[in-house]
Image (tube, rainbow, N blue to C red; front, side, top):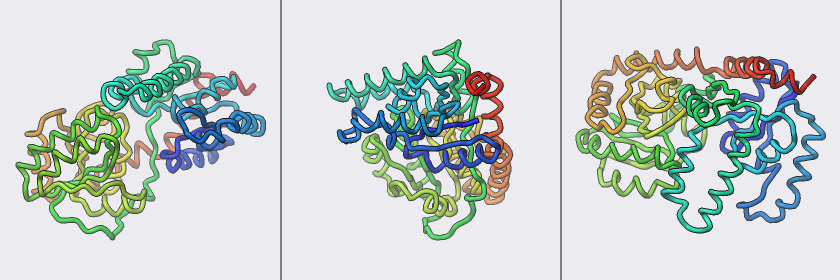
Length: 358
């Protein structure tokens, strides 16, 4: 059994953990960065355009995979995998259909950007249609896939995590009491919800809110929230060491998102024994236990944010109890050991490997 994984550069850290666990379970697995193997438009590196097809074919001829798992669905590597006539499985991390819609309505309005988004959309649809199986990263997303491709084989594959690398680590100094946010501003449907914090910041002036993250929608968020002295933007932090230092120091973790599927930051915060407060959207309720590891808050409800955060800020024992519950919950449900075993079982159950490796 040979599995080739093509991953985006930003996800290689976690995919390597997945690859190592698959290898441990007897699947010969190779992990590559997709853009290092196959690159073309809209990349400006023209030299690579003429080398990539040969490089991809050499990889396939040498490794001879039984199945290819792609981490995206619009990269040229993914299209090449589909055209190789080797079974392809897609690890789907987000609601692609909503994300494309938001991109077209916000950042991708110029002629060139419209062309880029159209090309990416065409690639993605080809990959969805021709793939053997789709692995959405939460049950909520699996339902969305089934609505768009009712005949496609699917199975939920949560993002795994290694608990052993998440431990207390001193180094960062923050003003207490404080709430930590660790999330990007890459998708407007997610980032816009952060604006609900305006009323929260105004009502909790003695609590400092620290945001770690960045993205193209940062400039729509910061001008509004930085008007408050108790909101601080720290930018992106080196992963995982500086992120670990940050999570060690915060009192409460908040995930303020308009839509999310399986945010690793929520798992990481719980492994660091931090109580969490998160928006009740998408796959977030699948990654925590309401009233046990933290609290869920309905979208747009600033009063509920104030209430739940205040409970935790004012009660150290509750913070500790929920933090300990969170660590246990993530360890039991999202270890790479469990995720890798279920992934291999799903491939066999759906005859993806057996059909093509015999």
